Length: 127
Image 1: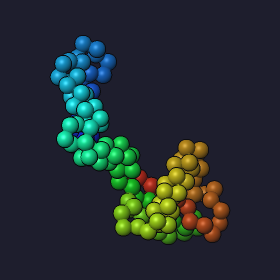
Image 2 (image 1 turned 180 degrees about the vertical axis):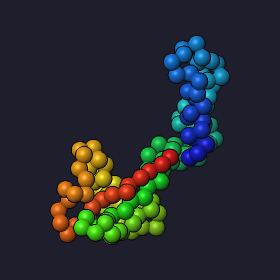
Image 3 (image 1 turned 120 degrees about the horizontal axis):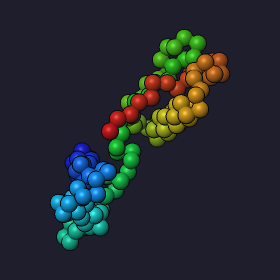
């Protein structure tokens, strides 16, 4: 994953806003990535697995989320990524992150959550 991120950044590094900077070297960097996405001769299966991994955005972020009681601010439950979680726990993490994102988008805070329910908060992610 990290290598792909580095390769992807290298393709555009120093070229944004300057058409003259898109050199043969940059073209070859992009071409290598495209060849891998298409599947290179003799490495098709390996490249297919690589493509599935690097294009699945769930692999691009490390998630953590805390649910806190609105009345006390006490942590109700904490999730770090989805590894080792059951299907239901992974689903709950996804819904918690979605709820927090929607609340943030519409300016809703814990003060607007119904009494007696945990409020999604503290959701963060990084690549």
